[in-house]
Picture 1: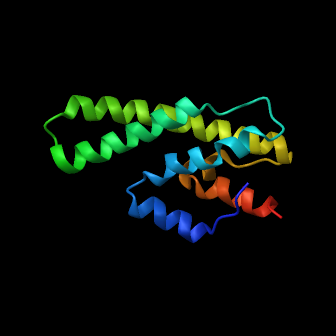
Picture 2: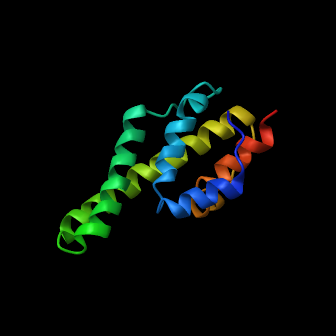
Length: 123
């Protein structure tokens, strides 16, 4: 697992309007799936999440509110997939490290909380 600077992770998340978060899942998916856990993260789910985030940002920036129904659908689908990925990654890390990880901080500070746990256990 790659040790990453938490400030850089935070800045990338802000600068990319949140698109870095699904990219983070794609970058860490393989390493997470190698950990000791029955839970595995699907590549398809990661790509779907990324496409939903990019679509949402593009629609909001360039098409404004002309397609409000699509924006609502993409937002709801994105949030569901996003939180599924968050809980899967959190469960994998808890199974592997035998350590409790706060769901509250995981939801409030994604992917910072998960990256912090990875950093704390990286050599």
